[in-house]
Image (cartoon, rainbow, N blue to C red; front, side, top):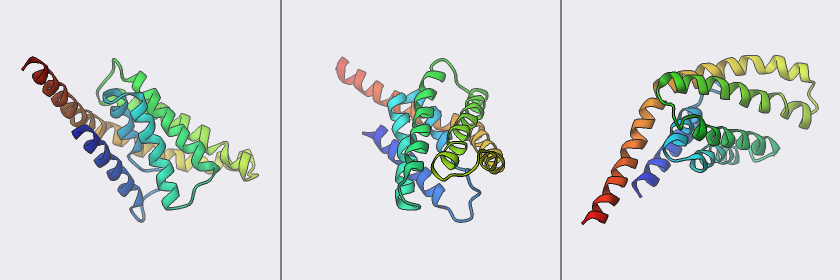
Length: 173
């Protein structure tokens, strides 16, 4: 139950952060949470966190559309990928490297497909327009990965370890 509470607190923190006015676009802590959550809680929970972070935010702010499905699936898949990447990795350098690679993947998949495929935007316009957003996205994700992800991992593991210890104590008693 406590793990569920931490998961909800984390989700609401990300959601609230994204609602901040005058926030630079693409500077948000979703990636900082899905990486340690993938490591500690597993791929499914990280997928759900990434997917719902996008889907619920869009449904409350800009409305739900094809862009929501694509971006939500992309963030969900990054959460799933994090569970595999972090099985034997930890630390700020690992978080920074995954955040860098995953952000490039996410921005290529979402930024260079949605405009041309669904809004008849030329590929070159999408590419040139995507560059400043990707730079901001990289700065935000890598910075959050270095500063927040190791702390989030400790926070998530602490609760996870406590629940395992509690279960073991109940079994031994």
